[in-house]
Length: 110
Image (tube, rainbow, N blue to C red; front, side):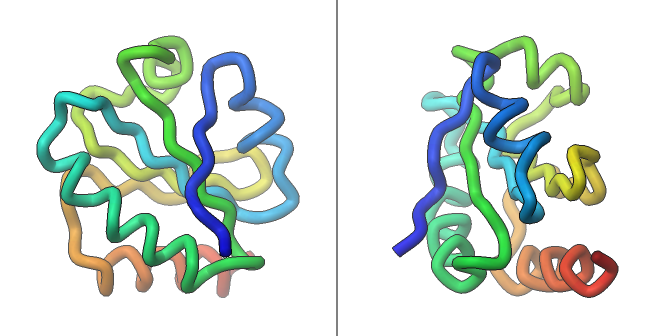
């Protein structure tokens, strides 16, 4: 069972940029209501795409460097990385079907 793992400013490069698989990064913070709404959707997707896409969460309060580097101004923001580059971005809460479509697009253009 694959679940989103936590990443940080210190581990982001190893967890995300050097990953062989596409990686969905959930930028969130504990005080953010929409972040709590998107968390179970990301959890479900991590099971649906187990083995195809890696899922990580980054707490923007604790890890401002990575959030700043990628210009994350509002959360939740989901960034999908492939080959160390951000290739897709979703800002705010979206239904699971929208996120699946976005992941499928990234996987089919790989």
